[in-house]
Image 1 (tube, chains in turn red, yellow):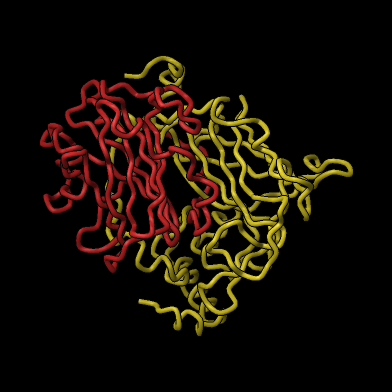
Image 2 (cartoon, rainbow over the protein chains, first blue to last red):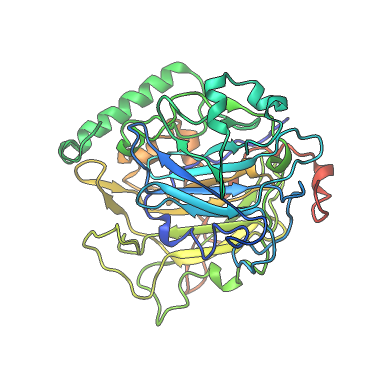
Amino acid sequence: MSTLLTATPGQTVGPFFGYALPFDRGSELVPPRSPGAIRLHGVVTDGAGSPVPDALLEIWQADADGNVPNASGALRRDGWTFTGWGRAATDDEGHYGFSTVLPGAMEGQAAPFILLTVFARGLLNRLFTRIYPPAGNLSADPLLASLPAERRRTLIATGQDDGLRFDVSLQGPTETVFLHYPGHRP
Amino acid sequence: MTTNSDRASTSQADVSAEIAAIESAYQRTGLEETQPRLDYAPYRSSVLRHPTKDAHHADPEGVELWSPCFGPRDVNPLESDLTIGHGGAPIGERTVVTGRVVDGDGRPVRGQLVEIWQANAAGRYIHQRDQHPAPIDPNFTGVGRCLTDDDGFYRFTTIKPGPYPWKNHRNAWRPAHIHFSLFGTEFTQRMITQMYFPGDPLFALDPIYQAITDQKARDRLVAGYDHDVTTHEWATGYRWDVVLTGAARTPFESQEDGASHR
């Protein structure tokens, strides 16, 4: 890839995004408890294992049939349109939650995933990671195959009765694998 | 771990010395950095919140090659004017901030969401965690949104924010800034950053701004005063352009936007 221009630097989301970025039903990609809805939730922790109460998470994913959504309306949800994107802030216990659907596999894709972006006070730039539902053909996924087992585990959600659990560890022995894409520079 | 009492007793001089030591070590490496360091101890809150392992390389696939779509249903054009919608006019210097959002190849990012938030003219945020004794302005909330136009331009009318005290160390003040949230044509371009105003005397003292160790990179966050944006007897004007990381999808594929992607 030839890139002519140097990207603008990121900065921390800071402590005061709470009145600006979250929006009504932002975490509800589909209405909770609607047919096919799953709960995707977890806790964000820091290097001391303490919950991070001022993080902001965004997910972006294919629909249940493996199509990339191209409908607008995420900021003014009508309850019917699947836009594939959602935003949730953590609560005072570092917990976040979305209601969504399991993403279908896209063409040629062994293991579907949900893309996750993490912002927080104290985090100087955004972090990207993937949430793999455990039902996918995980052993055929090239990214997972490129990781040692103990690191790979951090990208695989745990199946629960109502959906998926995915914890984010910013630092420490169970630190989540965060991703670097071509075009991203230090 | 840094305790609150440590923080309260750390002086600006101590923090400035830490900043200077990191910058001179950076200059000796000769390797250009373009983004903030995640591990930057002068910003105390980063100490336990930065990953210690290098980011793992991923070849973008599937949804990573696309971005969510936003449209007129999501954003009302009035949301780009932060000075309206209240009982009266807010206090402070009315200012227009405008610029262009492009990808790493210089292609405009069209019809995409830009969100901003900021303190008022006195440096106060409308947030329960901001309790420092500066006045709240009943006519200013400090939140705006818009969609970029066909050439990638955004434009906001707002009030110039004031500097803001925080508790990183004793007598710590943030340079005046506006928070910007940006999307590209691919979700791997997603970013949140802060735009600053030129000539701010707090730049050298601020561990968040200085977490970008390279001066050229820091300068990319500073808007330019633009008298062509300034309007007669109404508002001052600033110009700030944004470059997102390079897009992996080819222009040919981009032309398929609007079709259902599979």
